[in-house]
Image 1 (cartoon, rainbow, N blue to C red):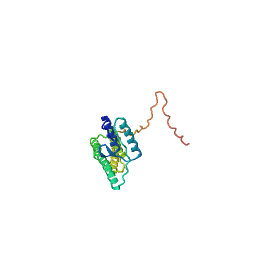
Image 2: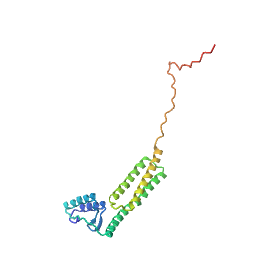
Image 3: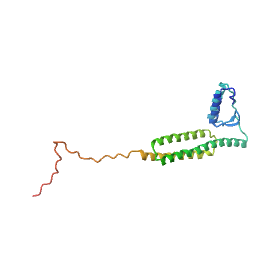
Image 4: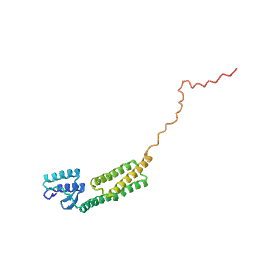
Length: 198
């Protein structure tokens, strides 16, 4: 795929799309992707866009007959995904440190919960994008998923602390009191006493 004669914006779009699909570059403008239906569909759309905007490309179906060569390609793709999973693992301690800092400052509040939920959602989205291009189940994926799940559990605990700190106490209705009789109204009748026996 070549965008040499196409607009510069197209070059960036192509690079971003191939990166998002997890393409393995063999050399400049030549890359490999697995022939999964959804991947093939995305690559064909990209190829059409390149051609319509003045670039050129060829889509070739390649069968790697040599088992060792195929294993090498898979290993390289997995290494690229593991590097991405590693970035998630490197960044997650920042999220946990933020929760600890807010606890230490006594700021277990709903506002902090909302802010941390947004941060956690970004981690989940990031992880989902990596997983979508993890075609061969790179070994680093399990650790990254476990770390994000652990971070979610920490946030749940933080939210429970915020709930305890901010929620009003449960409403207990006051004991019923007898109202005094209105002016001029007859008071309560005295209880009848039994007549003495004769």
